[in-house]
Length: 273
Image: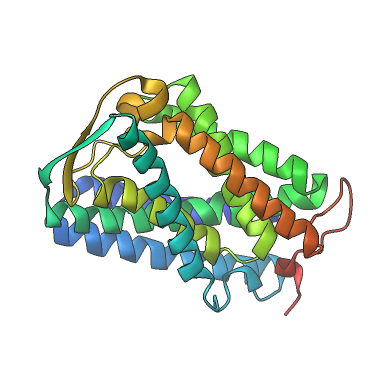
């Protein structure tokens, strides 16, 4: 019941925010404000429902102490490497400047998506499943579920869903396992998405979004560029995600944050207030 209550509470906020953002049809100021407001409200809702159902202070969303900033740097750096490799093989071309308004709208949209998805998939699902199955199985199961959830996006393919399951679902869960704070995966998730659409002007998981800061196009084999779904379906993204996941899991092991199968969790998020 705790799992159900938390999922419903955050999902209702996420759905309301998504509907509101969709209703304004990428109007720049409204999308920016509604996106940031949805993200903030989701955090408040998560903190409230965790305190109510688990009777503890949610340490995983406590003061981040720089975790958010580190996540932003990692996320932007990873996507810059991916798009750089695509450009090296001739698959990415910048035609000129895009739209500042579009970039601002995508900033709000990306914030809402990153925060709500991390709260749902890592803050709730991964955390509960890890207690029951251990870290490795929880990472696999929630990663697959995260990838499958993107099958409802425009231009979605089985390959794209699998790619996201590995490079995002696995990587973001590993980031949480290594740090036991949601702020790092939130920052990483936001920076990747915003860099993808808001800065470099490519598709974001098939989303029909406005032009970002750069007016750019991708061309060539879909395996390299990601095709219409966007660079998240590129093999370069998968490689980057696998490497980063491995690094995070090594850190998690060194810090004693790996929960064994049927083991008792050492998650800092279980600290009782």
